[in-house]
Length: 97
Image (cartoon, rainbow, N blue to C red; front, side, top):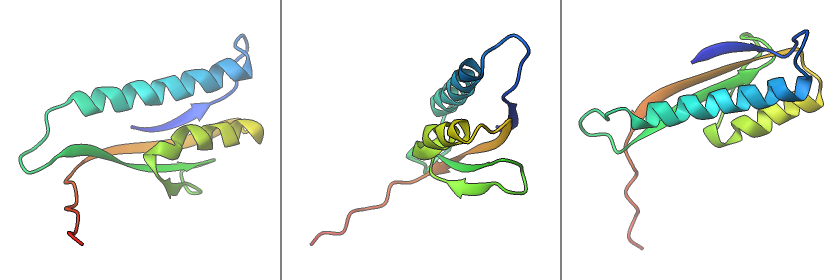
């Protein structure tokens, strides 16, 4: 998912648009996690970028998506860019101490 979210609408309040954006991202991640994993992978990880525009987007952790959207809300951004790319990953083995 590579998307510019527009936070202005003639009939919808700003808060509702923020909630819709968070929900859309949550549903996308949920759907991607249900897909079959390739051989050798343990789970779906997500490479994420967030910013006001594509050029200003910086890498973030998937757990910080809602925090960043809330931050954009507090700064009254009119749009924001979010990129969420699923990647198959393997769990790291714990070292035995």
